[in-house]
Every structure is written in C-alpha cells, then in structure tokens.
Image (tube, rainbow, N blue to C red; front, side):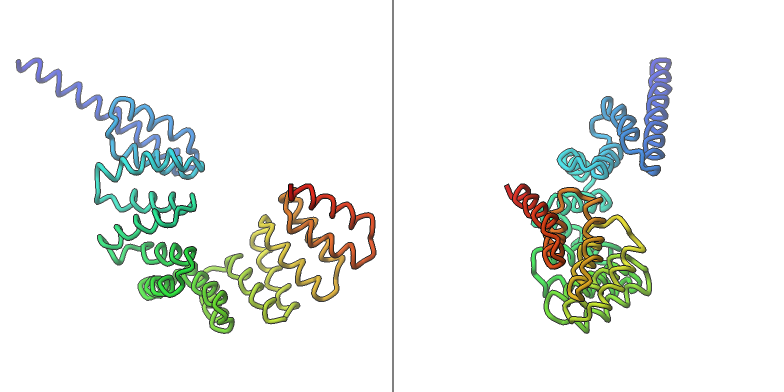
Length: 287
C-alpha cells in the first residue's frame, strides 16, 4: 500500500506540476496579447480538469479580448461560480456584458462587486459608466464622483463626468472636468470632447484645434475627422470638409456620415457630378 501511495503522490505531483507549467505558459502568451495561443494551453488544462478555476478565468479573459463574448461569459460565469470571491473574474464578466450592450446584466454584476468591496479600483467608475449609458445621469454622477474622490488621478472618470455634464447642458462645468482629466492623461477622447463642446458653443476655430489635437493622438478614429469636417463646413472651408471626409472614408468605406457631409460640401462648391455620386452612394447605404 505504501508503494502504491508513493506512486500516486509522485503521479499527482507530476500532473500538478504539468498543469502549473501549462497555466504559466498560457499566462505568458496572454500577457503578450497572443490570446489564441494562450487559449490552446488553457484548453489542455480544462480537458483534464474541467473545474480549474484559473484556466477558466484566463480563457474567459482571452475570449473577451478576441470579441468572443458568449464564450467569455460561459467561462467567466463558471469561474465565478467556483470562486465567488474572485473579483477579477467578476469584473471581467461585467465588462463582457457591457461590451455586448447588456447594461442591465453588467450593472447587476458590478453591484455584486460593490457590495463586496466599495473601494475596488474600478467599481465606482464601472457603475458610473453603466448608469451613464442607461441615461440615468444622477446615479452616474454619484458613482463617478466617488471614483474621483477615491482615485483623483483617474482621467477617464473626469472625461465621463465631463461628457455627462455636456449632455445635460452644462458646457462650462464639462470643460473644467475634461481639462482636469487631461492633466493626468493627454487622451484623444479628452480633446475630442472639448471639440464637441466648442462646436456647440459656436467656436468653430477652437473646435478644429481640439479635434486636430485628438487626431494627433489617435489618427485612426473616423469620428474625429467627421466632427472636424463639420467645423470646417461651418466656417465655409468646404475643401477641408471634403478632405476630412475622405480621410474618414479611408478608415471606413461604408461610413454614411462621411458621404453625407461630403455630399453637402460638393453641392455648396457646385461640384454637381461628385454631389450626385455621393447622393447615389447614400441611397445604396440606406437600403
């Protein structure tokens, strides 16, 4: 019996060590952003141990990064069921629901985290953002303010608060909050929001400057170009409007707003052939 027990202990140790190596290898790939390669290692572990909580949690995260949200939810729900105190997996689960647009489910998950740890680094921010997207602005503001109180260097909290204030007609307060965020992070979204506010206030030159700053930080967001094109249009600079619409269409050849904005610029410049071409494209996209 002792010999058998010894063999069993050795076998268990080797199996455990093998799984630990596979888990570590998977994590390395995951941290390198090689999520498909990472999943292969987590698959091997879960073939032999379907309730391996760490493998489920990591594979769920990888599926989330790949945009496979249903698979991510399946793994993360299992991971949370095994370890209800795993706030990391619970947070990732809420993130996946949020990305799917299921704000109600995301909110319920984030509320569970809030009950367990009200000072968790992202929980107040996450709840604020979910309430924001549900247009429950008072609740959103409460949680965003809590996030800022706990973590005063959280630029995204300032940006979202500023955006909320802008949407509720408080432009001056919005600009103050967004500028606070820009002190901590020179983010394209911060400059973009300032551009939107400037446009609404009728300061089109300032709007162009802010949208240009946003583009200098992130040149691959089509909306930055289309909003700047609108400001150019308000100043009668229709050739610049067309140029920005062209840049937006390089990023998305099916971008309806870009064709529409460019069509009006063509019409105002008397470019009849181009105007009708974009008109036909808009009809095609509307079908």
